[in-house]
Amino acid sequence: AGSTKPLRVNTTPTVSGSIEASVVVEFADAPTQVISLQATGTRPEPVIPDSLAFNDTRVGDTTTKSFSIDNAGNAPYDITDVTITGDTSQFAENMTMLATELETTTVRNDDPVSKQLTYAPTGKEQALNGTAAGLDITVETDTGTTETIDVTAQSIAPALRVDSPINFGDVGLNNTVY
Image (cartoon, rainbow, N blue to C red; front, side, top):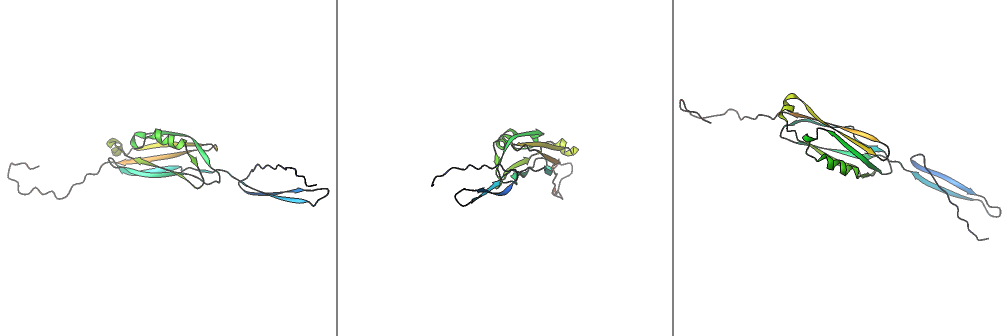
């Protein structure tokens, strides 16, 4: 009488969300005891955008856009690897640094990771030929998810701006005015 025995109960949730169960303990010389058990199964759910588009940025100008890597689940996950391929020369960011920053990130369900990319086209030939620059940002997580963000960027030729009319005033014959 009056002695206690520890009872160990483990849970291994296989679904996300609230889980309830009970343990019934019967005694030979005491009333039956019902012990309620509760747990919450947690699971991360990476949300990584499919694409990011920079449209019609003039050569010599810049356009900055943001993208977010989010978590729709109820447990954190880690970004384990980031690979960036494509024409990185047309973007202002140091892509190695961007990849390293992302690779050391834990994404929580209430705290999305936001990053910016700045498209800064420099090639007049690309703009005149209508050629687009592009990047693929491939993100791997410890959940086994691998997603690629398709970044497209289109440059356009610099604009020629002329105030009209240009008035040279009175110009003597055979004289040149600049």
